[in-house]
Length: 170
Ligand code: ADP
Image 1 (tube, rainbow, N blue to C red):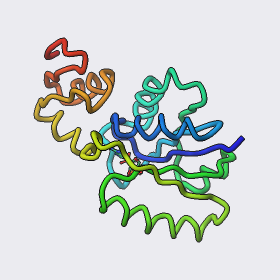
Image 2: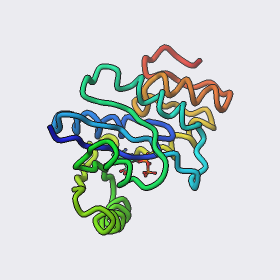
Image 3: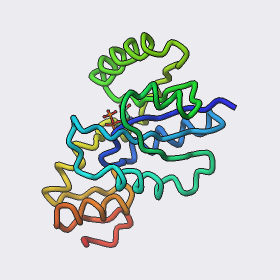
Image 4: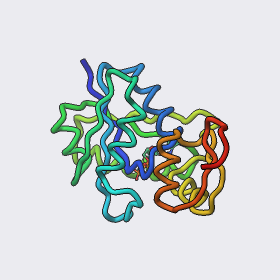
């Protein structure tokens, strides 16, 4: 069974991430979503909460596990017995960054293969940083993040946010 690892900051999880998670689970026996502590990005959500938000979203996906990690991504992938690293690609800008990182990771761990999955077109504009900007200003997050993520953002920013269920503002 090939174990794949999808690493990222997930601050917070979006439907763009979920799209990649769902498509990767169809390809591999086991998918581990690795939530990177990433102190350099100064995440809005603490590590434990980012893990919890992904766990809740992945509840129905039996071959997905969610784990937190610190340090080098390739070390984490080795620790969990992973063979493939999954990343998501949106625009050209992602490609350049991912290509650079892939070459560095190949140098560090030649046994790990990188697989980049293209995002579905409706999620091409989605990023966690944009979501945070919109949430901070009380904008509608419908179709961008699961409801439990929208609720967590609402609590963080103390604003009312429209739920994907269309039940109006909270
Ligand atoms: P990182 O700090 O590692 O970039 P992110 O949580 O921002 O962490 O992203 C994790 C991975 O998910 C990256 O490969 C990123 O390109 C991908 N990703 C983020 N948003 C989307 C999206 N809307 N569609 C597809 N992939 C995405």
